[in-house]
Length: 306
Image (cartoon, rainbow, N blue to C red; front, side, top):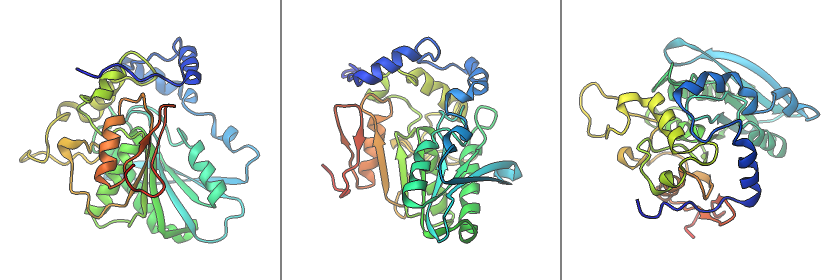
């Protein structure tokens, strides 16, 4: 495929990736999933360490997920939170196969402190044991619980957003589509951080990231295979009886009518296998991210194409 030369990593990131190479190979295979889950502390520091010395409270509730299964929600708020403010429904990353509700929580915790927001982070069930639609339906169940209990949580329902990185970005997009189509919670926005959107894994950027980094093209295959199985790559818009929509795979071949979903903000990384799909999805939303040579992408504040 033309154009498959990888853009350079940031020099500091290159050094970190080299140090990680001995303990975390770039390609995750299905056989590695149990060990990666057992070593979950490597994906995120213990929540007690993240909260130490910070004016943030943490409590948990157990709610009904898809088909009645139990899922855990972690709720974070500032210790002095007293009035309805922004609400963040956080969906963690991990390629649909690893991670937990504390993976990537450091960024939403910054928002909790800075903006006096309330964050609800969902422990959705993981593939391959729980393939599509379990993860996205668990996320939607958690979102509807959050919206129903907004007053008790100290959330302004008009300021509720979904946010997540990688798989959490894809599941956030799918959850927003479910909320629209089922006339569920009215979301005010989406924050999709290098979202995992396209199960085909055929873009130029997906070919550029092979055998390098901490989540490469092969890892993407592992995650999507676990999540979709033999439904992967199907154009389900044209499928007939027995097929259901794939809410968390919003690539071009399944691009749904996005009218009525909230505006999206995205952060992208230049050497990232989901870069091209993330940029295209942002264009559909009317917001085109700038991509900088230092390894990051940022939506322009105005939301206008640059």
